[in-house]
Amino acid sequence: MAQNRVAPHEMREEWFRTLFDGMSEGIISVDESGRINTINSVACNIFGLIYEQVIGTHISELALENSILFECLKKGIQVSRRKSVITSRGRIEFYGSAKPITDSSGKRVGAVLLLQDLKVVKEMVDAVSRPLQVTFDDFIGQSPVVQNLIQFTRKIADTDAIISITGESGTGKELFARAIHFESGRSGPFIPINCAAIPESLIESELFGYARGAFTGARKKGKPGLFEAAAGGTIFLDEIGDMPPGPQAKILRVLQEGVVRRIGGYDEIPVDAKVITATNMDLKKLIREKRFREDLYYRINGFTIQIPPLRERLIDIPLLAAAFLHRFNARLGKKDQVLSKAALAKLLKYTWPGNVRELKSVIERGAILSDSDMIGVDSILISSEVDLFVHRDEGLGFQNDMGLKSLMGQYEKQIIVESLNRTRSIRQAARALKISHTALIRKIGKYKLQKGDKSFQWN
Ligand SMILES: Nc1ncnc2c1ncn2[C@@H]1O[C@H](COP(=O)(O)OP(=O)(O)OP(=O)(O)O)[C@@H](O)[C@H]1O
Image (cartoon, rainbow, N blue to C red; front, top):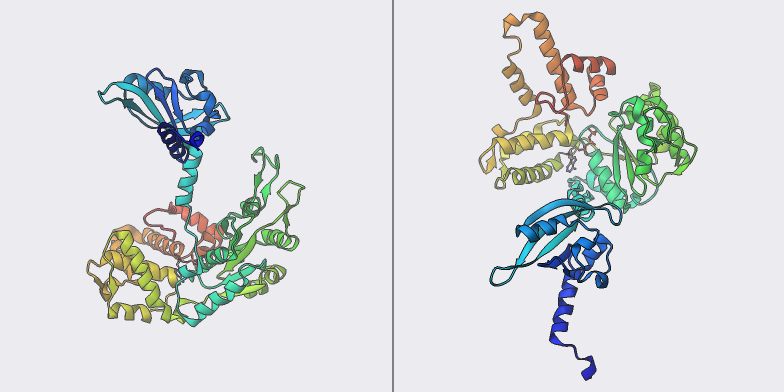
């Protein structure tokens, strides 16, 4: 028994070692002459060192970034979070912080270096900044139709079937697709692709990638496409009705064969992604107009989820409005507000052409405009009322020194901005204005409109 007894100083040392090794940062401490007297396992890993061999060694003998420790030791100053690199075991980037150690009389007796592997720091930042997972609990709605859709979708979410979501713009198709991805239990990424927003010339290389040396200007090693990037996860083909015929045929082949081939490549890469499509267009009408392939339509229509417009489920409005209000109040640092009866009545009377997206911005405006705990009807401005303000502000038609041509131009610009703000893409806006895609691009250039401009906010 006596042989197993551990001396108190050994116990204390053991205790410290366990504590040090359990830390997420690397620690190295040196005495006043620069000899290492403590190092934990994280620091040993970062530098590729073995504990027993390193204790008592002078830091100058090791291939590690000494400047932080030296500076701290010599000048007695603290160094905070300096980015450094060591190349002893491949390139390792870390944040180093050093602090001098003094004894009770204030004499400098050594220094301690704290290391954070930047890869680990980055992983932590990524984990925090990654968009939160969306579940069906985030899809707010108590109407029987929404509840039935959720109940039905839960049953099919983890199958390999392609799910097609239809519904007017702003009804929550993307939110619903994200919830399906979560429910499917797939651990890979959710990759949304707005088929209307990618220029036609880039659709194929974006979706399928390209092999090395496929064309001049291509990256040397080639590039994986989004189908490959979605491996283990979900690819969400939004606005599929806006996809031009060429890429439609290629997508159909990928969905039928379950493999992709990079542009200019020979290898067939199996597709391991759940496919969800969405559109706010009437695909059957597009088929009749020969703008959408019938075979692709049948391929993607295994299960169709049709999200009804907000005006057909008014019962969801109070719940949605309250949830958005709570969210905006928190963001604005305001106390929780409620809607007055008259404000709610106004919301229930409106027809919501922009659906939930529009309701969300009406509520946001209300939260900003109202300082009282109860939002009154005057702070509920639906979109057409805001448009009226814009027209009045700009004084269209009243500055008669502008001449008819520039007045007409200003009016045209106003109409274009409103269409762009109301729709999700230039292609959609062009369709709404009944002009061609290229004509609208020309006008955007003419009026120097840019995404993110105060006057041209793309939502
Ligand atoms: N049921 C809902 N619960 C909570 N938020 C919702 C709901 N439906 C839509 N939203 C919100 O409304 C906005 C528009 O939703 P989303 O982008 O999913 O619509 P969409 O149908 O994909 O639109 P589009 O056809 O224009 O692409 C988003 O901010 C979304 O979070």
